[in-house]
Image (cartoon, rainbow, N blue to C red):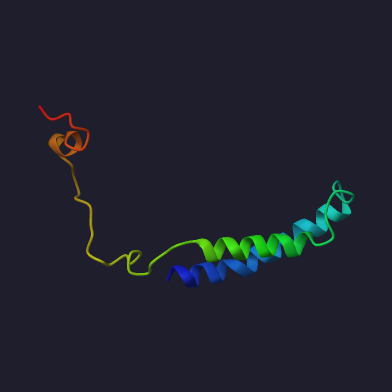
Length: 84
């Protein structure tokens, strides 16, 4: 599921990088941007996508792990070690 979401986001992100590099080359940063600005940004974003660690089993919404509807004072105090 997470892989599908990241794949779906990749195309708009690459399009945004293309638009930003084109805009910056034509405006304020034209002397400072490298010629391969867009390629560098795309490579950087693709590497970030590869480095994200995820496990589809951990991200299932219907895995049965649910938080209780309400918490008691004891529930809230216990993790902090503040129980009396």
